[in-house]
Length: 361
Ligand code: V47
Ligand code: SF4
Image 1 (tube, protein in one colour):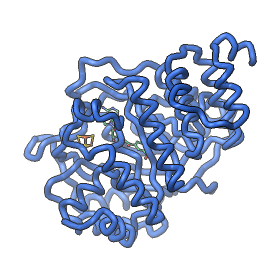
Image 2 (image 1 turned 90 degrees about the vertical axis):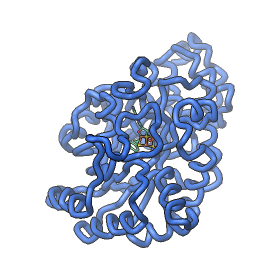
Image 3 (image 1 turned 180 degrees about the vertical axis):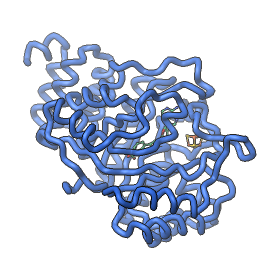
């Protein structure tokens, strides 16, 4: 493999990876500028196998998007609707309970709950939602509300983020999903999502959750107007928080889907870019244990290839997803456990069913 690395001119980075030395900003930009995909994959795979052997994780999970009403109107989002729009919806607690009951005979271990930044729903709605679900499925892990939703609920309730998280934890919240991070660059945020919680705000909610013993995930939405440098800075900001708290479970690079968004003139990122993002996040985020190839955004086939480019997790069965599909994703709405296992085995990996905290089940 030395010849591959030499051909790519990545000897200095290879040496660092072999010696378990941390890569820096310049290394990150060099990796993004490289089109030697197999060399990037080789390097990422070294780290992946060091951390997770030959294992690839999946989870039996369910998504619930409780409301698409959102006051932020991010330009890259096709899911959100303004209040009063004919396509706007807000699920009542009965409706949410019914969705959970409908699947009660399936061995679901994690429910992933997110929604828009809804101007009306009070803290009591979120508390009752968590409690209602836990009554129906006491052992399920509730991965709910991005840092953006948490900051909004706190602001609406006129209480601190810390108090909000404590109340929600008491009601059954187990972890936070990684959404809302987008790209931390102030330039990108100002252009695409000026109303959204700032990067500093996102990182502050995350730190607070970690300090309360609530693990979280992190994402990066790529393939719109961001530069390579901005991607690297995003990853390094996450790495810094992880050094301080150790609370991130997993990182998920999310490819932008332009369909039905205010950025529909942009082209979606290519397969090459998707694999580069998986590989480079594995290499730069040396302290985050898992990298997820989210099959919904990537398609199952590309996510499967991602398992040779640094990813060790395929997410899960999902059952019904709205955010990426409204933006034109061509992937199925759900995958069966057997299909997930087949994709993983066919990639030469060992499928491992996990719970939300990556314990093997
Ligand atoms: O925050 C919005 C992104 C995120 C589009 O934590 C879009 O395990 C693509 O965070 N094209 C929500 N993406 C999804 C998310 C997530 C997904 C899977 C697993 C986990 C986890 C988290 O979706 C949003 C935003 O960054 N998004 N619009 C779009 N047009
Ligand atoms: Fe609202 Fe989230 Fe969509 Fe932004 S990405 S418009 S915050 S639902």
